[in-house]
Image (cartoon, rainbow, N blue to C red; front, side, top):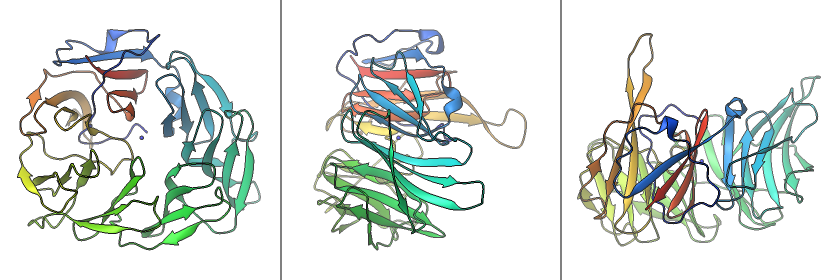
Length: 354
């Protein structure tokens, strides 16, 4: 859940009203997405360069900057309190954050001091980010997609060199144990779904854990001519989708069998990013937002707008919205099956199903 340049950004559905949200639709024009409300809230912290986002509810959430800045909202993203996890900000690089409740949270980062030494640190707070304790590691971990399930048990992906491994802890991050899986090096995100965890494997495989990453079983995606697994998404333990680049498939039995399904968009990137850009709130209703890029001068394509696709029949057919010329959604975080915050450059968008 970083303002990435991506070919498509997919999103969910929303069913409850967020109290206190101030509508400011200057950036949302010609909103004719059937059954959906997209609103925006001014956001003055675009300079923070989000490294991770963690909302505990529609009311309370944290955004972590890559340089250790931390901002917190306790009023539905209308206002933010700013803090910093280190007094000296010059050498801090943070990569991942996980809060287990409103007071207790963890941040992983690297601290480069003036003498050239690098320290790998797990920061912990028990007072909502006002103060942090540190645990230093001798092992040069590079942790991403970290999640703590309680004050002791957590999981992360360790990305070092040309590969990565799954790490688990049962002592609050004091030590980490390595699980070696044949992971696809193109992906650095773990897909969390309650007590289920999924990661992308090599050879068009998905690995699934039912015990917070301690043991894993294999889900084989259909083999296609592309030999590539571009992404996957699971609504629950039974229902999910895989993107095999040239073909898309759907399962209703946890990946034991797959049926080909056609989408009017090329691909989806979950879990290339650890945020759900492709989302279903139930077996029928889903929503996807697809970014459009174009060469408008220079050597690289630029963002020019977004199309929104919605389905009400499990992805068998999709309706496309009119073109939104200015709707950069950025980092997407789903608070519930029916509600999402999207952290963009100058706005925070809320997505809500009517």
